[in-house]
Amino acid sequence: MGLEEAADVITGGVFAHAVDPRGGTYAGESQPRVDDHEHGLCLNCGTALIDAHCHRCGQAGHAHRTAGAFFHDVLHGVFHFEGKAWRTLPMLVRHPGALTRRYIAGERARFVSPIALFLFSVFLLFAVLAQLPMFHFGNSALFKPGAGLGEVQATVASEQQAASEALSDLRATLAEQQRAASPDAAAIAHATRRIAEEQQKLDGLRTAQRVLPKAQTQAHDSDDWIGAMVEHAKQNPQLLLYKLKSSGYKYSWALIPLSLPFLWLLFPFSRRFGFYDHAVFATYSLTFMSLLTITAALLITVGVKSLLVVVGALVGAIVHIYKQLKGAYSLSRGGALIRTLVLTTFICWAIVPLFLTGLLYLGLAD
Image 1 (cartoon, rainbow, N blue to C red):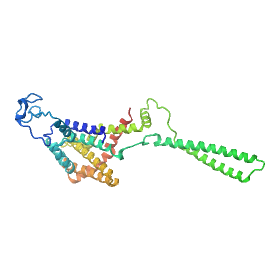
Image 2: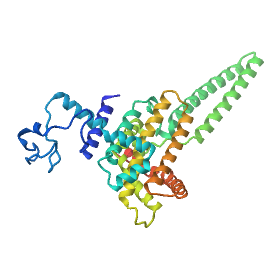
Image 3: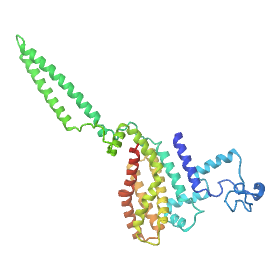
Image 4: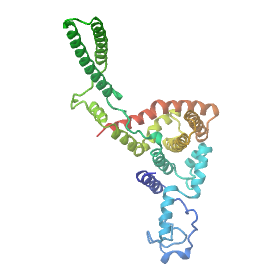
């Protein structure tokens, strides 16, 4: 894993820990004793300590000052090594509906918050995908004029010039043969046949040149900002791909608000479920999809058939949506199935296209 991607993972973990700071005691760390509290006062707000943590600001009474403890903080911030992480992840995979319902109902201390888990999973997703060969674009011709059309046009022009020169040479040879004192009939017939062949070849190349679209070399008007962005992308497709990747994890959170109106449409005008319920549902669901994508990409990398992995991932995603809908919203099997089909349609034809359109705009913009 490269330094940039590793830094992204660490940043994501620290960010997630900042969103969900009260994670409890670190794995392997015992609760500090009251007599360990320095001066009997909270070092953060100065309140007199009556327990292992300050009852006013929540900070632990014991403040460590060792290098080992510092690196333990880093590991904890990145990987959330604590009891509730191991409770949350299995439930996210096996019982997503129960996890969503229990978190909404108020069981916050038992589980990692949806946004913390989502942020870390997205950073991890892009860090892992960046290292896999299938996601390296290399010298891709994507977004080049006509996806390589310029190279075809140059080849046709070169062949046309060569055919014209060959045709001129053959006509000169034929003229010499015809002016000779004793013309060679066989040589004249051969030259005539070659001239006909080269003329036919030249006519075909000229037809191809007329049929091929012309390269757009003219400058765009100042008002044609979309055309200008497309031209900029054509000049440097690798920069565009880098921008798409960068924007992908920076704006991945936008999938949450994009999903909310479509989740609301599954329960229009319902007083039982509000936008908070939908936000928790969407965030946990997107976290699972990120982890599922990582798993699928790794399986393809180690040699499992791509078609098998893709089909399995799609089936797993749909089943997960069904189970989460059924459990989170207390639906019947029929109601959950119908809403799963509707939500899957929304995802394929509205949510994902809107998100990708936004990424493409950000990638094309200077």
